[in-house]
View (tube, rainbow, N blue to C red):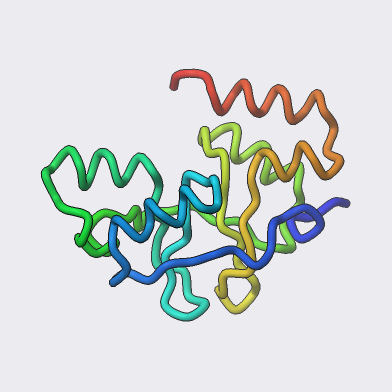
Length: 139
């Protein structure tokens, strides 16, 4: 059985709730990503996405000094590092989610898993292709 631990990305860059929208946007540009976990230490509090920045900050006229606590998503799905990869892939497809933060048994952030991680690190191409189609199709 292949688990999330086998393919996830480790050493994920995180931000804190007091970091700003501007710092998140700069980090996303630097890392070429669209999402960054928001944590206190290794405890996951939420995720900030490029969409959060646009919809919850820019569209509402908030400035770049707005703390992430005001714009981050807090109702987030997670995976466990011991979860079966096929199950997680099916859940991602069903929920139309491209990436999930990964927690260990003590609820600490230990990584992130994306559809790209699964595709690159050896999952069945047909399964990944179907899941990506499911994730990308309108609900």
